[in-house]
Length: 221
View 1 (cartoon, rainbow, N blue to C red):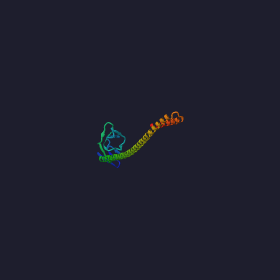
View 2: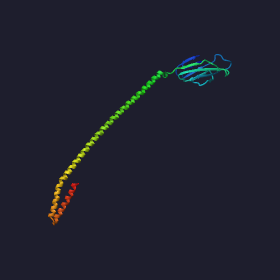
View 3: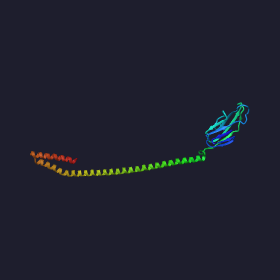
View 4: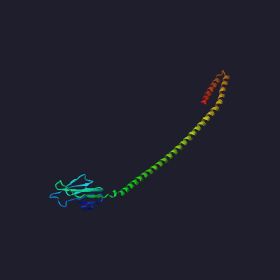
C-alpha cells in the first residue's frame, strides 16, 4: 500500500503521520504476486470512516477532507471470493490543525472570554452612565417642581392675605356705616311722628326710609 496526500507520499507504511486537514488522501495498493491466475478482488476498510468492508473497483481509494485523529486502513484480497488474504494494517495519524491544538483553543477561549468580559463591562459602564444621567435629570426636574411649588405656595399665601385684608376692610367699612345708618333710621322714625299729616314730608320720609333699609341690607350682606 502507498499513501499519498497533498505535498507528500509514503510507500508501504505501517504507521504514518499526515499533516493537518489533507484535502485528499489516496491509498494505492496491489499484490506482489498473484495468489492464483486471474484478477484479484480487493476489499478495504478505513476504520473511523467506513462502517464495514467495501469492495474496491480498481486499485486506488480516495478519501476527502479527513479530520484530525487516528485511522486504521485495512485491506484484503481474494481470487475466488471465499478465501481472503489480509494485509498488515496501516495506522494513519492526521495531525490537528493549529487552531485545533488545545493550547490554541485555550488561548482562543481566553480571548473570547476577555472579549465577552470587555463587552459586558462596557455595557455596564454605559448603563451606569445612563442611570447617572437619568438621576441628574430626575433631580433637576424635582428641583424645578419644588421651586414651582414654592412659587405657587407663595402666590397662594399672597392671595389669601389680600383676600383677608379686603375682608377686614369691608368689615371695617360695614361697621363704620352701620352706626350712622342706625341713627339716620331712628331720626326718620322721629320725623315721621312729628310730621304726621304732612303729605309732602311723609313722601320724603318714606323715600329716606326705603333708601336707608336698602343701604342696611347692603351693609349686612
